[in-house]
Length: 140
Image (cartoon, rainbow, N blue to C red):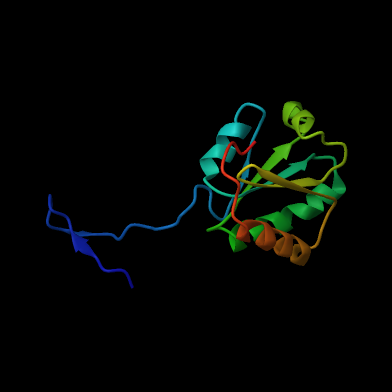
């Protein structure tokens, strides 16, 4: 249990600071052409990007798995979904021809998987990628 300290100003006990909490931790975020780069930069670490569409059955089947992975890796990974119909510039940038397409961005390293994969496969892929040291530099 974290130790509480007293505030110098009020003399009342202070709540301990949360350490290691990432923005959007445990939640699947959404991004568009306008805010994609900002969201990836704000993640402050590895990002799993789901490039999907509302009409794609396998994409819809993958969605609950991504929700679970966002919770499982909450302290180490940010999950962002991009609807390629609403954000065609992102789809063009990553040359998306088939969906669902997952991108795992760690530093300047980008890895990609296509298709609806099982949670166990995705967890193994993510663990392997985030355990490596990222290459410093521009992420996207």
